[in-house]
Image 1 (cartoon, rainbow, N blue to C red):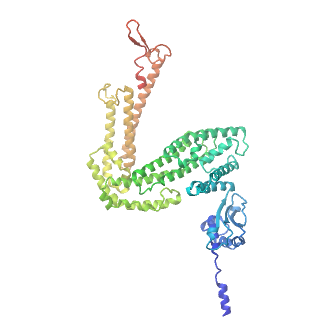
Image 2 (image 1 turned 90 degrees about the horizontal axis):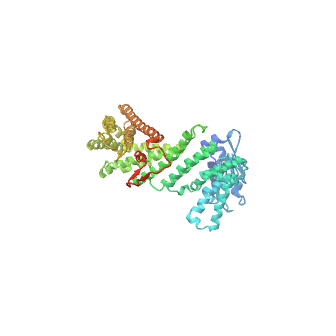
Image 3 (image 1 turned 90 degrees about the vertical axis):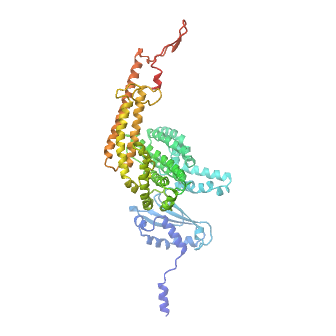
Length: 600
């Protein structure tokens, strides 16, 4: 019996220590040493790393000895890129490439399974310690102590100013501690401005040549007007951010012309995109995207999309157009910010679809079809999270939304068909009616159901192109009509050349609008290639007409300005008008051709 008891005692599993389990899970989770990540990054699999840490002398000492206040668990880089788990009872990092987790104690109280979470604190380490300190102050302690109303009220003004001064001092020290080409410590657009401010004033801690010093001063002079607004970007109104983005195009162009490194410019563009991404998300967090009134949400989404498009498009034009031939690398685009822009448009389109249903259905029909429930698939999903990891959840929600919309779309398609038929509109006017519900029209079922109506619209638009050309040739006097015969004036008392150009431009814009709208609504129809060809031909014909009259006007005016007797020749001396002393009549000394010229 005693032998059996001893066997059972030997076979019993060891008791687990909840304190150790807490430290092990926190440390290995923070170091990426759990699950599939461990096999790619560590020399040992995750279960062996757990055993090594759980049985380590250092962990036992940290938990059992009140006077030991620090435990460091780190991953030291080895050959082949894999890491080795190391423990220490003091803080030290052999290399900036190493990663670590440091556990400290809030008190010397004995650590138990019930207080381990309260007594033990954890901080990760990676990279330069000074840079880590900068991030901790900027992103954790300064906001926590200075921006939180409750906590900031407990600090006296001297302590607050000291913390602000410490933040600035550490940021400056980080900038001084890196080489001129090192951008690892540049975490925001304002950091980049500070880099050039310190370099230009000789406070960077680096010895610069006279040429580099001069270049730094020139670059800082360009950055200086936008530096403060970049620092306070989160607090700026939308209109001021739009103005700032426009000004940044000139700033980026000017600094690049001063020899700004290409890799640094690419990094700065990404930082600007990241800052705008955060600004847009904070701005939109004030509203419920799926529940608030459409007018409010659509306005905020459009404003945000315009900001994103302005920055993505502006930097893209700089690289592909203004810096063509100077930009040595591959064409660069901030894809992350572009994804945000696409998501904003997608959310706006989904909201527009639901909103446009309300203009077609009665309140009773909206309730019966449960239109208000079509956004339920998006509950629990942040629509503005647009990374590749969040994309799958978003696509699944969109798919469920489309499924809920299908029965509604079938009913709405018939109502739209009836409304379009009853409207009596034709051609361009009917196209505008289609565009009023463009997002709804593009829903797959409605798009297909309205194919006959779209075919009829395409035929009318083809006829209208012929009518527009005949109208233009008649109003422009190409059928032999005189100055005021056979055509309507485009404006009051306009000179003939202005009438010709304005008339051509008006119809040219109309043709372009028709073509753009048809590309969206009618692109799948068989007659679309013919319409595109005909519309482009008319557009080019009108453009050539306007360019021809403009060129002829320029040649005529320049010729008259060279001929002394033409009346337009520039005369710097003499009188414009004089009074005849004999009969007191007023004599005008300039040509009748001069007054119409400014109007033209």
